[in-house]
Structures are given as C-alpha cells and as structure tokens.
Length: 204
Image (spheres, rainbow, N blue to C red):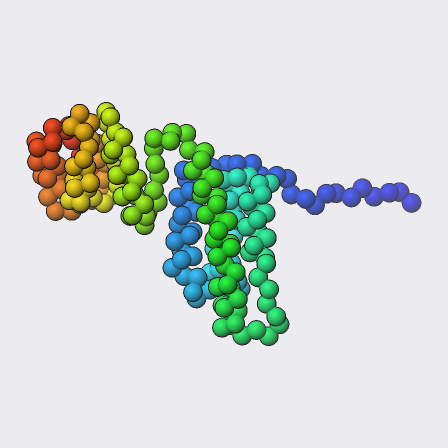
C-alpha cells in the first residue's frame, strides 16, 4: 500500500502589515471600548467575542502572528474557566476578575509600539487622555527652542495659559478642527504680549 503524504495544517506566519502609529490608535480605541462596556460583558457575549477578535487581529497586524504578544493575548483570553451551569451573573464576575490581564497585554503592546516611533521629540497621545496630553505639552513647552507644533482636534483658552511659559523666540503652530470661543483672537493677543509667531489653522 502506498504511503499518503500528510499536508501540514499550520497556517503560514503573518508579517507586520501596519505602522505603529495606526496600531496604537486602534488599540487605544479597543481599550476605551473595553473600559466603557466590559461591565456588561462575559467571555461568551457576542460583543466580547467580537472585541477579542478585533484585538487579536490588530496585534497580528502590528507585531506579526509569531510575536509572543499575540500568543500572550490568546492565552489570557482562553484562560477564563467556567464551570458547567454557571449563571450569567457568575460568568460576568469571573470575567471581571480575569479581564484586566487581557487588557494588560494590550497596554504592553502600546508601550512597545511607542518605542518604535521614529522621532522621540514627537509625542502621540490618543483621544481621551487629556491629563497625559497636558503633561506632555508642558514638558515640550519647557524644552522647545525654535518651533512647537500642537495638533489637537479641540482647543480652548486653557492652551494659551499652558503656553505662557514658552520662550518668545519659539514659533507656535496649532492645527485643530474646533476652536472654542475667541481662541484665534486670544492667540493674536498672546503673540503681541509674548513676542511669539503664532500660526493657528483648521485641519479641514
């Protein structure tokens, strides 16, 4: 009898296919979604399953399918143990106890991707991180020597208060979508008082 060859069922490795900046944005969105909705989730709800599939998929695009982070995410997600007959409330309780470990993998992924960003003088802050953004801008205001570029979808008068310590020789460029109140007018008064060149533009 002839010997039949066995075909390998192992899927080929998937390489990195997305830039770190884009992956960070998507993962941060998934973390925010989890924070907002995980109270009503357990591992077998359709929303949680869809979220996990999206998270694993973006990790593969950002790190490649063979990266330990992908394996760590899958392992943590599969680690939820339910005894047969558990009611939904019990399932949610078990999920709440274990889910932080899943989120920790994603936060680690964001940190590792940030290390890959090409220019350490550029700082990426995701939506919803107002305090972190404030802290980073304050740091950059102190060290800025020639030009400061701030890209923020929404700005108000508090930004001028933050920029009051920037050196007068520094050109300030602001790209935004929405300006509250007399933001542009206040910018002109700021420039007149502090001596900075100030360029405020809308993103669209």
